[in-house]
Length: 89
Image (cartoon, rainbow, N blue to C red; front, side, top):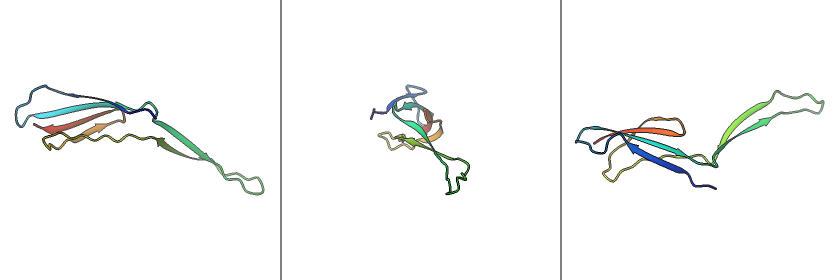
């Protein structure tokens, strides 16, 4: 399996105490992929149900943000490829 990738950027290089900090993380995994399973049930007379479909993700990603000050980062958004977090300096 391929290793996930991540890049991160902050909205500034220097902050004063109390300033809002915005962290943007772009991430992905080349071998993460969705799969769809389709099920059809057929009885002895040849009657079949309508197809039932379910999807799943193989090798899903989990994103965790911490820093060495113990600051709490709050997730503002995450679309599965780009996540945005906010904290206070």
